[in-house]
Length: 237
Image 1 (cartoon, rainbow, N blue to C red):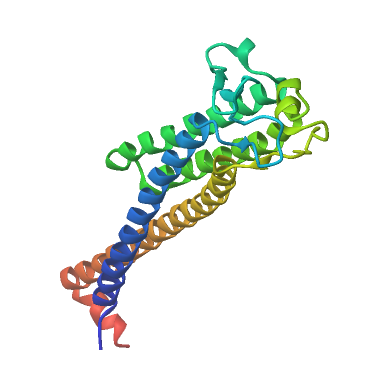
Image 2: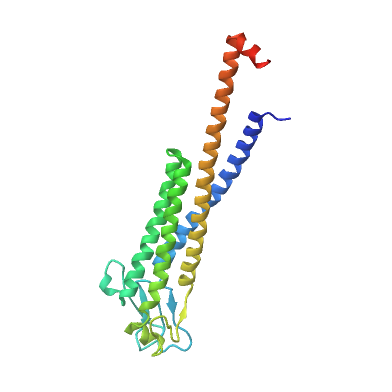
């Protein structure tokens, strides 16, 4: 039968192996989330034209391209994040800001990976978990606020007169918007996993401390008994 110390060592080795593997997967998917976030912020394919739209074009958070009226094949592109006045809607400006904040948060989370070499592992996991949760919140706000700007004139010209707030008319949702929603789910799952890993690390550290204190107490009793035979005699009476 295994002693307490041997069983504790086997449990420790298995736990560290499994925890390390899950942590590596968590880090890889966090990097994937950062890539998704950057793509969603930069690419102007949140909404776009369809076969029934009066004009060709597509819109992102701050950059958009629409037909110039003479030819649907020639698109006039405008809008930059550095020039807020070029963004056609206040809702688009707010959505751009929140998606930018989510991108900054997830990149900061990746930068925190370096803290694993210097700080308590549980603390780093929990810090990253809060960052990922805030990243998800910012993405949710961006996705909710963005359709509020669909009533702007330039979008109505492209999507038709039926277009309004949260009503896209003849246009359609493009892949960048869908990718942003996937990013929300990814961030929430990663945040939950980071909280679980952080709490398990804290619990395991507490168990290790209890085991060390128990071993220390047992060793003190053994040393005392070896030095003073009276205690050993008393234990058998």
